[in-house]
Picture (tube, helix red, strand yellow):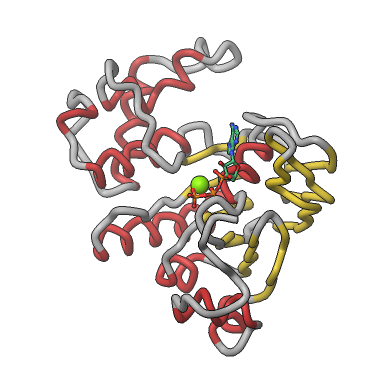
Length: 239
Ligand SMILES: Nc1ncnc2c1ncn2[C@@H]1O[C@H](COP(=O)(O)OP(=O)(O)OP(=O)(O)O)[C@@H](O)[C@H]1O
Ligand SMILES: [Mg+2]
């Protein structure tokens, strides 16, 4: 469960989140959409405690919160194995819990889940962007989190790799019953993964509904988004 109430966040007097509220139930995936700079990543960063809100509250289920970053953010100097095992080998509360054999099998299982096997010894620079993304996905879920936040998990991937990642997001939700948020610009990701969609513009919620409601009408904001139109209530030009 994720409960966000009346979130307000300013950066240097610029209001980036303007009273945002929403809930995500256990086992549910919420897609957050909106133009660049509308505050999507900021919401995720506040939920996982990387940033502090100015006011408002955030509640999540007990357990770990995983964040799959917009850019893969792997540790360049660590190989794939050490990247994925990182939380289990470095976190105070976890580092003595697993034997080398446990770690080997956990890393192998997570790699399999993202369709990669036998690349434990490779370094991030030896992998394609899409593979890096999938490794960062494996790293995020290594602690069996109850809350999973994905920041543009399919950005920059070819359509087939996108479908793969979308399937992992769905499979993971079914396996863990986690509450997930997926920030995305891609309709395919919304359609495949989301139970509900939240659209924000200039830090305000302008739509909340199911993907079907968004596609079959919605409102002027979703219409503009779905048709990628320059005309509508949302203007891209700098104010
Ligand atoms: N640490 C920061 N310091 C100052 N301003 C910031 C900071 N982080 C974000 N912002 C500003 O807050 C606004 C929202 O940023 P955010 O990264 O949440 O947007 P976004 O919706 O994720 O955009 P994109 O689709 O491009 O990733 C932007 O105007 C951005 O410049
Ligand atoms: Mg972002």
